[in-house]
Image (cartoon, rainbow, N blue to C red; front, side, top):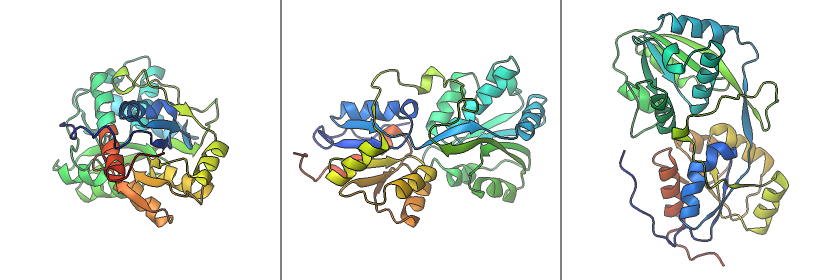
Length: 291
């Protein structure tokens, strides 16, 4: 995938950027921001737990491994972690859990890299509109048996869109989205492949109280919303953002933020670290550097 044009070095220099996600999921973006002269900080708002009732997921994964599905559709990087845990519980690698005859589709670039890094070929993935709509726009497969593991709060659009195209969709709750931090006994523990984890540039974590103080003082330049659920938490916990600009990772997150009354200054054209940095640059390119 081509990368955006290199940023003007002064556009983000000195900007303090809040990343509303956990540190491990923010590292790649934090690395780019640091390289651009910004100061990224993270505020974890949501976390992920195993489904309360694992039996539907276990049954579907058993069916998957037995060749019962034509397609596996992976809609998030967290779903990859769930599948890695399912494979580990069965004592096999994820590449061996998915039969050779089952094709894999995914949405995001990080999910695609993670799946390919463990030996799974991705047959279908949007490169422009990396969203449910983008995947559905590419879907020309004949009616098929489709396994769709998702979050408990997943919007119905992907499932309904696949069904409308003639697929027989088995959608199961693979994980629950919860307020940070997840319960220790239920937290997802599978490590993401090194291909999607940046080992350096660990961003500094701030507390909700520190973030609120920065918003009130006008010392936070932007907040990056990585999901609709993250937007809901920001709107709930920080009703006043002061001069802070809101950047959305993609159109669904931007729509959720707008519905919550947040003013979205820019939406990433691609839901990738490069795309988010480009969106931030578009907001600050014509402003002077912070004092």
